[in-house]
Length: 176
Image 1: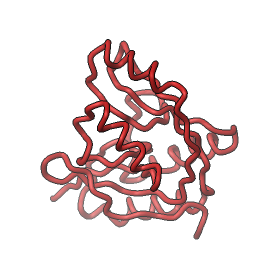
Image 2: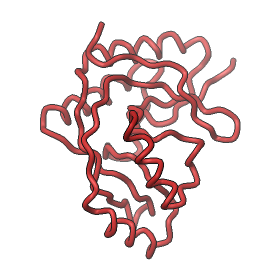
Image 3: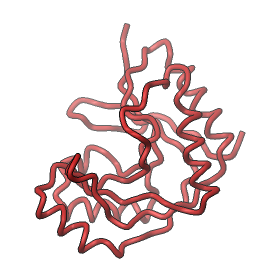
């Protein structure tokens, strides 16, 4: 039975996508061009072909129950020393953050259910595998950076050959 490697994300919309990709380019992100800037809600999971419809139903149901999200991206932070990743932290007022966490939880059911490997830290990855000195310099230099971004839809990304992640479907937030 064929399986699809999927992830559920909030894609960073324009014009912020171009801004974030510029930061990624400057930091030498190896995933630039293969993975669009995003906030991961369901990390990569294998879904059987016959379960795709049910997975997409979960996406639409969870999206319909969550309002549009206005979130702050930034400042730049790091998971070092555990993981040499530079990322934009995600924050906001308590209600939108609660909606974000609720959305993440609602998505992890049916064919999209999977255990959490790490506590949920909403973020937009800028670069991974950076040397310690470059990572520290990026966090320091980009610490004042923040942007307010409105997310109005969820996306399912599918892994294609070459570890390229492509949007295959989406669902609006807050609309049935």
